[in-house]
Length: 403
Ligand SMILES: Nc1ncnc2c1ncn2[C@@H]1O[C@H](COP(=O)(O)OP(=O)(O)OP(=O)(O)O)[C@@H](O)[C@H]1O
Image (cartoon, rainbow, N blue to C red):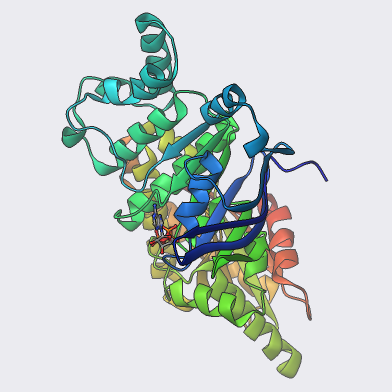
């Protein structure tokens, strides 16, 4: 395996009698988004501050590309700090400065670039993030979602290798929350930075993370893929995850992914007992990014919400629909063969084609495209394999065009 970008080896940190980190071991891999979760006060922010070098550990080692950071020379440590960027809980924009000045700040403070070079860099980043028309506005005059984008532009303007997001969606409604997640995920793909996100948004943050770390009582009690935490048997992990999950995904109103998976296991047990067939339909909104390009992240998430409402309205059964990732919905159809699922899917496609889903109609020529894949369950087949099967067949079936 390749060397991790950052590695904690038995790291301890106390504030007086308050022992916060009690032997942390973890790895952050380059080019991935790692989510850090855990109860309030468990030391997530303290951990972030150690990563970025704002706090010094009492014992153990923190390695950057295999090198202990405490052994770096002063100039090397300074150079390392420049590779990091931080997006705070609140966007922490300065109200007395324009959007342009806010974004320029890290360049003014951390680099020796000339005024015109800074201007070029700021305008380039604003252009890449689609906010070029608001440079003279003040933060108080722009929307919450736009502020997050300005804060992200400020975090990205130094072209950092690593960005730390400390609860980036705090205080936002479900559409804006999902818009920020979608934005982080998109820009991570575009710019290739390593992202570390501290979040309480479970399971939403799982959709954008490749790795997950859970802290409890100053130690790491889970490190792995987001999907694997659902299978963890440790009661502390289970209780924490289930306590934070709501019965409904806040954006779509559907069952969240972990509950969808639980429902799948129940259906599988029923199949074992009664030999009942069941099937899944996997719906993927294929062109969410186009909505985003035309109308922004919030429009993208509103469109997804409207689509989900229509699917549920058509099926009239809420607990069979679950959200499966950023742009996927799984319909779990009990006692339904593949042929019956195809019929249901065809009806759904016809209904979708005429119901006129979104405000996106306001954009001439736009067609909201959703593909569907169907798979019938087989005894003891894990959900991932059945979903993969539906995914691999998706073009054979229906392409919904909701115009
Ligand atoms: N500079 C500091 N001086 C003293 N104690 C601190 C300092 N920073 C953090 N702590 C303590 O460390 C513990 C962990 O705090 P931290 O902010 O990391 O928790 P957290 O997991 O991020 O919580 P939340 O999810 O609520 O943001 C708390 O008990 C806090 O009081």
